[in-house]
Image: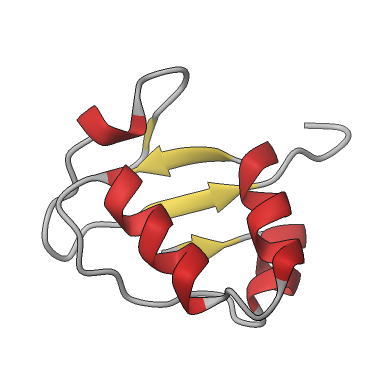
Length: 81
């Protein structure tokens, strides 16, 4: 998972590996890993996601399959974009 802007600040890292079959599982694991900082969960609620370069949009995160070795981009809202 690659974190950008406020998500990177809340996670305390630019990226970290995931071991999940769906985006929902990966996000749940990330929330658990960063449970000590409630700001991380708040930031994730406002983020959009790209999975291997494709926008997730409004799809249910439980239906978004993740490939082994793939990339999840975590993009908080930002001005000017």
